[in-house]
Image (cartoon, rainbow, N blue to C red; front, side, top):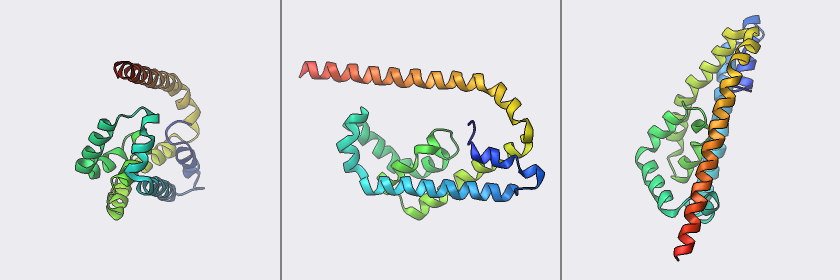
Length: 173
């Protein structure tokens, strides 16, 4: 479902006074935080050795991992906060925070500050749209398909390009 699924649809009930908008926002924020903690601890436990060992299967090069690690150590706090405000990025930002061993309570604070506006926006959208959500979804569906096709195309190009580079590197060795 578009735009956060359950968080938006739960808000449909808010205008009918079946659910409190504040409760929906707080529940969404709590769920986001718990999921982020799990991803953070997975990155923390596996750490850099896990990425160094398995990164090549994700077509990541060692120098790219080094560059990303250095960047995250320098801008990690800002990345966690801003990343929470961006679709797609918000899903994955916790893992590198754990790998970089960002301080847990600082990670938690930035995660809360970043996900609270997102959860509020989604819940408020659902609250305002109420029963008209199906009309909005009908308008947004074509845009969603264009975005999905564009993402699939970009990922396919990246994989093809990376595999081609790897074959060329293997041929020169």
